[in-house]
Length: 348
Ligand code: ATP
Ligand code: MG
Ligand code: FE
Image 1 (spheres, rainbow, N blue to C red):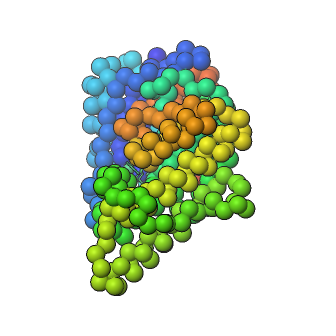
Image 2: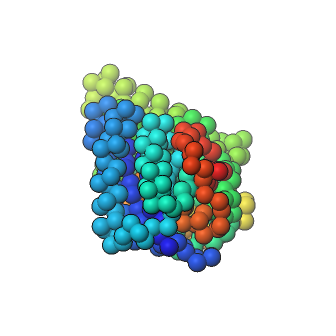
Image 3: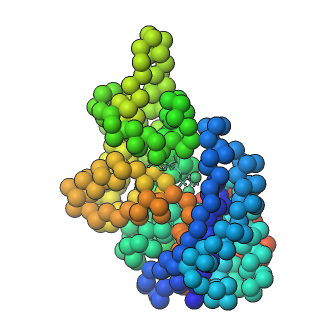
């Protein structure tokens, strides 16, 4: 049986088709399609919710149609529809939920409202197979930065740490704005950092003092430090070495992320670490995570960059795992929940 997954929580409209696994197996990716309104937000330096919602409306049906064509399956092959019901932008979520309800009703198949963050984690199973349990996931995205204990991807996810202010992706986007690099900031900073010196500027590592024993993160002080450093340069009439700023900022982010993740895995006695979410596409984060996991004897899994950022396949993957677990479908009255906690993998 096959699940259609629909994603519309932010600025990407995604549709994906996956095959439901046997018990203990991993969902199989058949094909997916993506439409993005990212270009329309660039000049605002961040996602404009109204523009995102309208773009989802315009893209939804042809994105779904194209996913079917790419996967080479028929509508009649679909046994369930899964949709992101949170967290995300309220208006954007609503478009996907409404579309998913319409498809499920028209095709007379069950509907599963699923968690976007669980989707980021589940994306990895499409590439690397079943996730050993428990695993420790570092979820780093535009709106979230969390350490998650994954007991079971279909229903047992516990947050053990989170950012107390900005998310890692948000820090990338804000620093890109400070440097006039546009939106989204991650990919361009990732690229420019490769041409800079990561040791050029000693930016602060938030919440890494001897008394910060917990697994929380803080990136707002780092963003402010970058802004102050750039302003001081400009006031002095000196050029801003953009590549060095990018490299030094990025090093501060990935140093903290990887150090805390490895420490949490070691403390909790968990042998498998997964990095997921849009920031997991970052080249330096992937390299340093690999180096530090190797040194600590931990197995690292990171999905390919195209599955790290938002997509419909990851939502279909959670839907397939939830369906395979025998959980009841969501209510036909399902609605979007912008603040859905990560522990709620599928909505009742
Ligand atoms: P959330 O998943 O928390 O609801 P979101 O869906 O908007 O937020 P994602 O699509 O998972 O976030 O990730 C987008 C974020 O990832 C943006 O902040 C973007 O700058 C960042 N990002 C994308 N590619 C890279 C990269 N190569 N390096 C660093 N950051 C990146
Ligand atoms: Mg996006
Ligand atoms: Fe996301």
